Length: 255
Image (cartoon, rainbow, N blue to C red; front, top):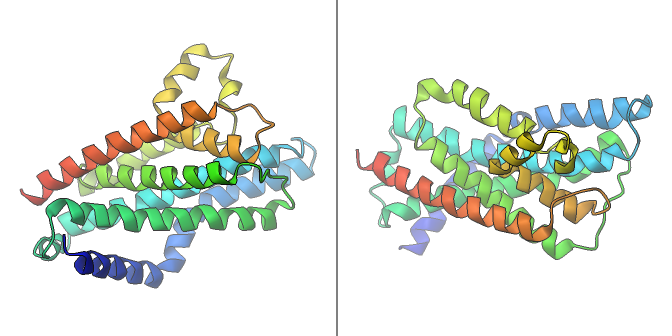
């Protein structure tokens, strides 16, 4: 691999992201911030939900923001480059292995996901007020950030190389929306104890491990999945989605 070529392509994607920073931020944070404001501020300040719900909600909002940002950053450019602009054909001429083109897309998506996750915390504090978070597991939190960013970007790679342009709206309706609402983002996994079948079915949703992982790192006093289960789940999904994404990228690039 030509490392300078890899860095140059990464720099180009960073420039495009900076140029579209406002629209990207709007797309990424609009829905999470609406939930933060309604459930974390309106419902708690009016007394319909306990004040402690803010701390329970914030880890799920971080997970949503990271996964949505990373997926969007990889999926939409790939759909455009493969099916609209055909810009991918120019990239394929670069002096580097085919798979490294996909890896560059994943790294760019990971960076955007990490930025989105880190920005959520101070933004949510501004909207909700002070939220008591634990600082006892910062190394674990950092590992989770990297794993969730990779999850988002690799998922975006797999989707971007699989779906057709006519299926984008359907993808978000049938894949992304259920992934969010059944991903333990607004409630802990133990809240599904009364629905044992559903509680086990949602474990095939990678968002569960992202939300529960951040919950275990930032607000460990609330119910959450164990760290071992979270790490195994995230590593497993990262590996599977990355392998699928690379296979689909190669297939799409060579057709």
